Image (cartoon, rainbow, N blue to C red; front, side, top):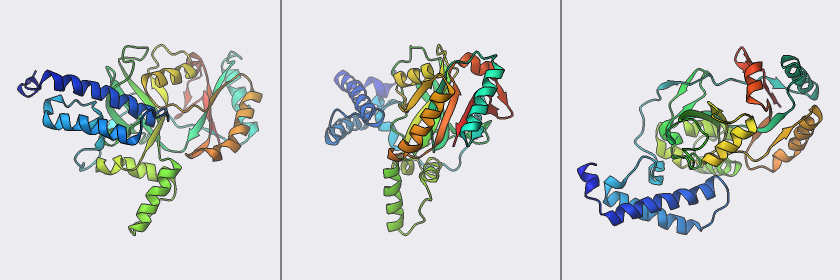
Length: 320
């Protein structure tokens, strides 16, 4: 223990630890579950109390403290980082017949063994990879060229739905792993951002996806922190004890990641097409942009059996 840490009163140390847990809990209720339990004013009071304690006793400050999300010093540039495994792109299907062809290819490739698919909304955002070690946030990287991307760790740290410390670090998740998903800007936040830019006489963004990409690639993390970015995560590498894509999503949700609830396990082409038709209409009611539906073979073992071709998986397709 450092001299600085040793001089912190025991009562202050205990209160700071309690506040970190309470603030983290309420931040998750608000930013991840959309189910706030206290008012904004009550949350702000708790946050300020924690911030004041850490300011008075710097030895109390921890890397995963909620106070560390506000951003740090501006960067000069982004460094390149290599992904654990390539971040693949998806082949597209533009009609029911092309979806049918995909299902037929999967059946041929597995001798008809596949009996279920997971259908997930395709979020129109910026693909992102998050690395965790021993349950703690370590790094964030953009997709880039699929093999390597840009290190945006400081910026993504400011996104409140990204957990700094996992809720179940001793659970079914691997010790070191990558989580992948999308960073996006909700429609309401996009409209508010463009209104502010227009009022200031600055160029506006054409769509929420461009605005999300621009926010993530700010050299000053404090700018990113003000944009109101959100996340949905959907991939775990390695998958730990999960055997299916739906189990992956459940494990991510349990650990504290934000997972899109609008998904369905389907067991036939007809059920897949019904999901596509349903969300072709319902997507307009969402407060975020979608770019179709991703259809994935549910069993991870069958995904591995089907493998990839070029830079796309044989076990998934994006319907647009």
